[in-house]
Length: 320
Ligand code: MTE
Image 1: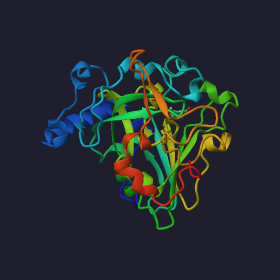
Image 2: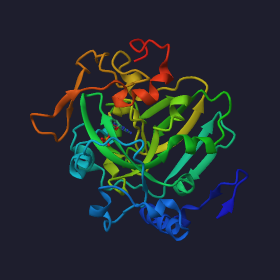
Image 3: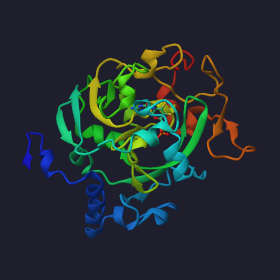
Image 4: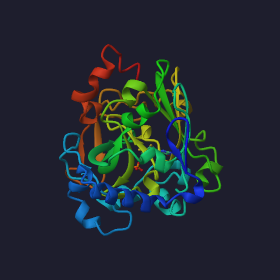
């Protein structure tokens, strides 16, 4: 182990504790120090999974959580979009089980004072975990309610000290066609890339997720590190992140590059702006009964009070 000029400790891959063990052990240490994180093991879900491998300790954040009932663990982990592991909803759960999430590192570059390659442990170390129950609204007009475990994206980004030129932040997924069979075909332009304007990224609702339902994130949901921006369509929530880059100009994003008329950079959930091939006015809640599963789509996915001001003065039909 050694200190770098930036004060962030770099750890050789051989020294790395398996990621699940690391996360669980870290929580126990926090408890020993009497931190709030360990006292408020929270959530309706924690009991059911408390003894499960990969169980996490976290604070339940009610301020930022919806009170809607979450989807089942089964729905959330078997109905996925993750084209690196196939295009059918059941493919990611089937094809991602052997995906290696440790050792894992994230490279940080561009318009920031602190750049370099950091182990996942370095990335996670200072951040207490929270559970936040968010609606996930997919651009395909279905939705789920998911109890994520993570921490504010802005807290992580601030550690890299973005410069005044950092107007955007870009993320990339791992490119490893040996492990990710979907990357062997040209269904998308690989690696998967996403980005946010810097003020969006710093908004307290945006999180980096490392778990759901109180446990370490399953591979199909984007382990080991995945972005969640609850007021935007689900495709902004890039999985298996290996790169964070601060940029002056808007970065490429996979879906808006592949089909610019269909998927915009902003991708704010908006019932009034239809996809060219389907309406966004309503959505189908996965797992709901046939009678109540269709519901109106909410502007900004129900988070308008918190985020609409980020877009004041912008024509949201043009910047969709
Ligand atoms: N990230 C990567 N790397 N590859 C993908 O295909 N799909 C996106 C997003 N993140 C995707 C991705 C889409 S379209 C959605 S709706 C969400 O992940 C789905 O997240 P979930 O499977 O955890 O529900």
